[in-house]
Length: 170
Length: 147
Image (cartoon, rainbow over all chains, first blue to last red; front, side, top):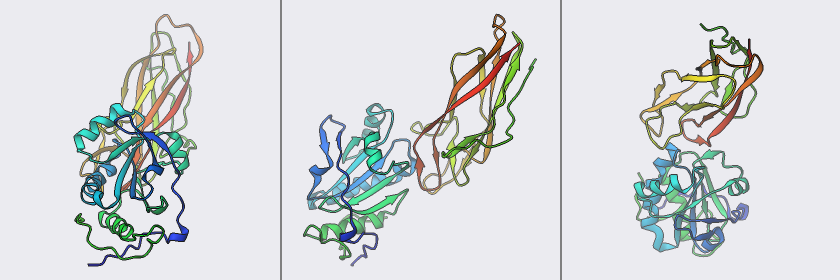
């Protein structure tokens, strides 16, 4: 079955996702630009955000099923209580993807991030191919990700068909 | 005996957040007397804020706290919450629309007569049916006249 990736911004209209440097839950320094060459689902979330809780199991599934195809989920927690709040949550929810702790600097360059979840789908060149604010749709995410993954050449992702990714949408 | 209860929601405060406070009037009370302050809160249409006792440990409760000041805080009373169903939860304990939070103060018997103020903070976290806004804190200041 070929899915339509209607949510993707045309390649020429995509803007580069602002780079950032943050720490992950193990204390490692992570630059967003480290992920260049991969399709990235960049999820700004928080432990207190109930709609974020709905999406997290989807992202766990995407990470598990699509990791080997040049895809990664990157969660950026906007919890003001820091790792004391976030680490137990990661453990409790079995989050299998990398989680970073956001700050006001990141919020600023991403437009304030007043509303969560805010989730961006980045192409292999680190450009923003789709933006979702609020609780979104699993199938829509999956279609966008698989469409970008099947665009083997960087900068050639918009509007291409998406095949089965092996991660069943609910 | 309550000598003065001086908060009347005559007008909505300006603000860009999902919650705003009604107008705050001064409170006047004698030494040793009780004084009740009621804050009226307005939640933006389509939004709710978590109640003071949300039904999930991860959720951020609405909480009014007072700094040390000329009045002693005896209790802060929140209204009964509403239980709401949203696209992301079957039972959320929330406040929406307009609601009131009261604080029972007492003037210390040895308080010095004169003017002062009670200051505090109101922390809340709001969501609508598909997204949540980051937690906000509103500074609260109530002018106090001790007789």
